[in-house]
Image 1 (cartoon, rainbow, N blue to C red):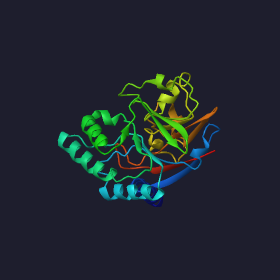
Image 2: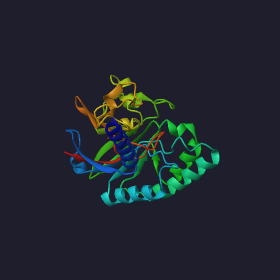
Image 3: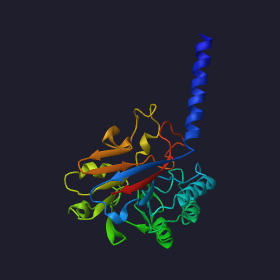
Length: 274
């Protein structure tokens, strides 16, 4: 009996250590997107997508610097940031300003040939929203709060359309009502937006974060908690629908508790292919 107990204790300690370590490492997940609407000028166009940084006491500046350096080595054409810049552990007004200043001091070193674009997440509305928006604008980050941006290359054009947060903001689905001749990337922090408005929006590639891939899963097969009313659906890496895809990310930071289990933090590198 004591042997069984010792084994159980050993397994428990092992899993806790695994969860703590996994939360502090990250991977670069590479994916190729093919679509008949991608123009020739955008063949091999490189996009970096990160989300859910939740920067705070459990996220060291050294780790963030390492992530920024890794992204810059990839030499992306554009960078898309999905929102949720601060962790819930950062509560006081002075701490919010302090951590946002430290975070943006590092993030402003990100380099992309054609720009850095971001939407806001639900946590960005909880604290320091005005300070965050001011910092993002001062560092030339383009906030797509129900906004559109045209990206041109080699005489061809694609569209980026970012919507406001589904829970705390006011997303304007009408921005995606019309079918565009241009390849269109839709960015929503909350993936539920794509299901809630599925029958009234048109796009070719969707980007979303929020679920953290489940964060703590049963060996990547099932997530007890997903932050989505659609259950396990948006814990997948990519969802293929007719003529369009929705790309999800596990995020780069951690929410609530600094642990992860089979939902490793990640930088997503997307390469468009004609």
